[in-house]
Image (cartoon, rainbow, N blue to C red):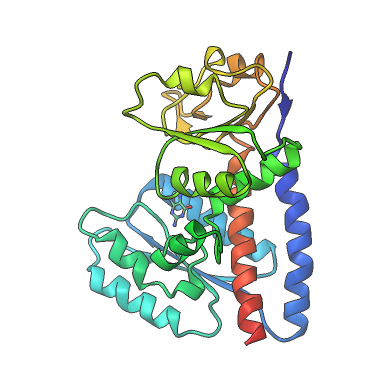
Length: 284
Ligand code: GUN
């Protein structure tokens, strides 16, 4: 069996078309959705992500502001900028690219973003709302994964879902969303004793560990839907996921590739959240 491909680029393109129509409606009312992205330091991967986010905004007809700081900037300067953006009516979404340099208190910085503009969904208020089943902003990557699962046609209710990775950005919110959709959820992590025991039971397997090709075909239940959130760089500079695509493809029922899977969906859901924030502002 060769797995069906869950094409993140194609799905992202169709969702972005629908978003562009909503952007036009707002623009006709004189309101252009605006996203501010703050990048601290010169991490090359973060620089690429931020560039892609800003460029996606422009293409969707939204306006964006990129604010860059050297790695040794004082935290107080970044907090002052966030305060300014919180009060700026032309900005509906604010995103601070993670990770921040070690002298930063990341939690404090994320909490400084107004919960109404927290399009990443990382503010404690928004994390709490998601946990209570009343999400205001769903974190972009797990939100994108849910859209991919929907598009794959897999039944979530009653399914065994296994997530590998327990990060605040992916693993934890992913668990909340899958639980809310009626799946039975297992979250595995670096201390999990027998990883393959769990992954082999999964009807839905989400890999978000950040370890290249760690999930191999022999760890996958035949017919499972496999979503690969990992973006790793191999020694020869190529991108690869957390799933060993070739061996997994022979076992899974459907699988997302890297690149061209979750990546474009994460950015699409950032656009969706920014638009949502702007629509709420327009209603007020
Ligand atoms: N770094 C890696 N993923 C993300 C994300 O989704 N949002 C932000 N702000 N930083 C990240």
